[in-house]
Amino acid sequence: MFTKVLVAEDYEIANQGIVKVLNEKIGIHNVHQAKYCDDAYLKFRKEYNDNAPFELLITDLSFRKDYKIQTRTSGIDLIKDIRKVDPDIKIIVYSQEDRPDRINMLFDKYSINGYVCKGQHAIKQLIQCVEGVFQGDEVYPPELTSNLQASDMVHLDDLDMILLEELANGFTKKEIRLKLIAQNITPNGESTIDKRVSKLFDNFKAKNTTHLVAIVKDLGLL
Amino acid sequence: MFTKVLVAEDYEIANQGIVKVLNEKIGIHNVHQAKYCDDAYLKFRKEYNDNAPFELLITDLSFRKDYKIQTRTSGIDLIKDIRKVDPDIKIIVYSQEDRPDRINMLFDKYSINGYVCKGQHAIKQLIQCVEGVFQGDEVYPPELTSNLQASDMVHLDDLDMILLEELANGFTKKEIRLKLIAQNITPNGESTIDKRVSKLFDNFKAKNTTHLVAIVKDLGLL
DNA sequence: TAACACCATACAGATTTCTGTATAGCACTA
DNA sequence: TAGTGCTATACAGAAATCTGTATGGTGTTA
Image (cartoon, rainbow over all chains, first blue to last red; front, side, top):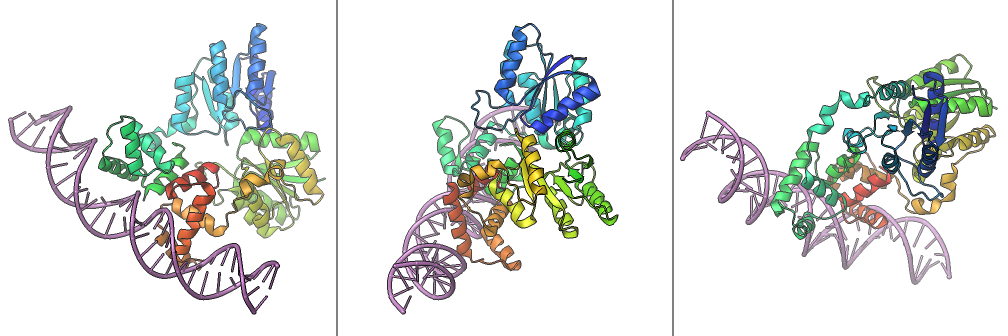
């Protein structure tokens, strides 16, 4: 089993909880804690340079901002920087996020090794995740593997995303059309945009533009 | 100090963390845990009926939904139901939420006794909060008292919230007007609603309804 | 009490949204 | 190759949004 672990989590009580689980349920005692991304990075760097690197990083994604100015403001920044230095360290992300596309992105783009959703079954999942990652597996959260269908069925292409984005930014379809033309993006006919948005209404069962944006924001797609 | 406490928090690791703090830092050992609102309510009810009521409830606001169907789905439901039965129990809410208006609402509308923001300083704050509430104080989180200005300058009343909510749900202003009339809520003139929404545009610097809803969703007010 | 500010409401006009119908092009296939 | 389905586009009309102006009521204050 891992012997040396770094936990990056700004939320103190959760941090304590993780350490408790690692100690008592998995038997890892050499656990270091960090409440800021920059702090985590420095700790990582120090041990790495001393030739006693951490074997596992467990990190949250979102870190609350406070008076301390940080160069890294999210777990993603932290992961990026650590991966650059040490491609071998195992990384488990442990966060609120439960959107399949976001989680998949972490595995694809930042080659994390495991993901645990904060939630009711976090303890059991964390234990399984640490064990799985130790054996070299990629460990996806059960929440994700069970219902891939629903959220991923509606496929949104680039134009759809641009439209949603610009509508949410308060632009009219005419304005959006002009922007598209200016950026040489096709299609950009006025009625095509109308039709695209209408199709999004169908996809998301929205009654109008405002409703559409509200739904998409709630789904976390925007 | 309190001797009998109920902790309602679906997120296991945090739940552990709270118990640890209550045990080790405040010296409360009779701590019961619940991971679902309904479960918390039943535990509360049982002890109350046995004439050995909890003196303090520490609860989260948001509970993740899962296969278990719950009649109470949020901490607010739980608080409402518990307050109905026992107006004397002290309640500390302990949540992600950091919007001043939401937190104030909890004190005003549900007469909670304390609030702690999940975050970097949650342990210290929780300790201070429990001690303050024990002495009969209302304990607001330091995050709130320090910068009331910014976010609270825009005061949203009930009607504003209804309008935002219904617009986000895709209803037209005419439909909303009819709903207001049906529920005997005044004012409900067509142009009044127009004017109210226009004022919200000003407040949030929104260009149109869609933009407004997007902004408010991002701010977490909806 | 008179002046002033604020709010609910009405009305009207310009703009935008939403929907339906219609045409043309492109790709696939029987 | 003719038929079918999909997409981009145009146009048009009904409905909704947005904005400006105007009026009457209420409450505050000089």
